[in-house]
Length: 479
Image (cartoon, rainbow, N blue to C red; front, side):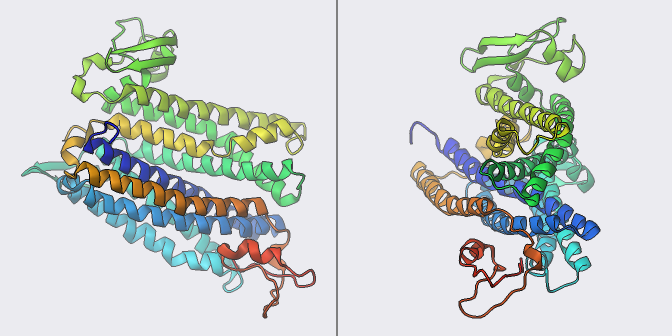
């Protein structure tokens, strides 16, 4: 199919499904924490704006959470259908880690999600806040186990090879492998940033259309504070993560930087632009800043890294993709920092909610957090190639030997089904965003009865019912 091998189709299929999946947990992690903050502020201050924002974003959280669960189920099946030899080789480690995620995080989320979404008027405020915090904690615990499994595949330790299979010998080392702390913090902060950009873009959208109320101002303000504080922190975390990667996966760093040769004692440049050519073993049209690459990666002007030519051709990741996916992630991170600084400058002049150029940029930056996450994930996973478990099992040895027609057919079905199902879900979620927060929603009294409008508990009917709201029949959210 289009010149692809069966292995490449299997990799594309897994990459396609997980690319869809990763965006939903990222927003779930960020929104769950945001909802906990909103409800905490509401309980502390009793200001209606926090309650109104909680009701608004809880509907969007519910839709996003559902899509995340559905897309995640496919991933578990693919380990058995397309990557059975990987499951046989490393299942004694990855299987328990994923099981722990279900037994801790998923059960915690499932236990308190109903109280969080439907218990606003049915349980006490303290218990409801506790449920919201537990759901937020569950999302972070879920990320912890998933990233422990993925990080072990990147930097494996705490195991023995017995009869061609990995057997765990020290679970502490398995979980807290060398790259795990950096990946966990980097991904969690990325989720917070992606959510802040999403929330900020929704506020900017409403302000650009002349809808200005305290709730919309508050969510834009909170999003910009998060961006201002956390985006520079993420840059520091990324630097630490890069140094860790240089130590454990030097070929990945060489491909990310586009360096084929070692540079002696002169340090190496930071390439801003170039076209890495895997066949010619060079980066064409390279434009760089002398010694800056050494300073960033080694914190020394004379620091060195190994060039890609120091690694056997069969052990090199695809430098063409890595070079640009890494720069997309970093470039968007720089824009996030600049947007946060611009918001601070406008805030000091009391023009944060009136500057249309700023609001337009905030709107266009809305999806960039998710794009940066995907670019970072491509960098991490493609940079691990040709290994599925780094240094232990090659990707070619992990794939199930399916035929090309089978893989082409299932890939096509996945593309059609995903774009239809999740396309509808995303479109509906954006409709909820366009609707905007309802002022004093939490104080309205539900009237009930046939034909009488009310704000429904179910997010899937939140738009239509509000459109038929009778002027003398106010409603109270039960979400």
